[in-house]
Image (cartoon, rainbow, N blue to C red; front, side, top):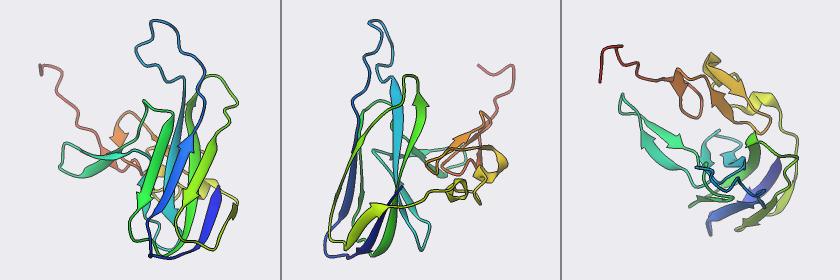
Length: 163
């Protein structure tokens, strides 16, 4: 991880992730071969924002961030930052690895330096609410029955006779 300390709210904090993706097969439906994810976490509140994520809606009306699985550039922005932040990068699906990447951090801050990231940084009490797998970058990969950044939202199950 990357720890960004002493962030002032005088300007937005922006983090950009870029990687050069291996070429996809000629007839591939999805052309992204290696899928990395970016998150920016406020270390005091635990609040997170995800790269290129848009709020998605879930069957019960809750908002679940939809992570970008199409692009090899991701950016996250925190409008009025204040305090310390942790940048997390995770390889959600790396078919051809290892995958190198570059990070660019802009804003008003004192230091940006490497810091340790442990599995307990995952949302849902570090265990993805018991419904997923905690990845090394602090991301949850949810079981098929659950969704959300912390895997706490149960997916709707349609009856077998539904069309």
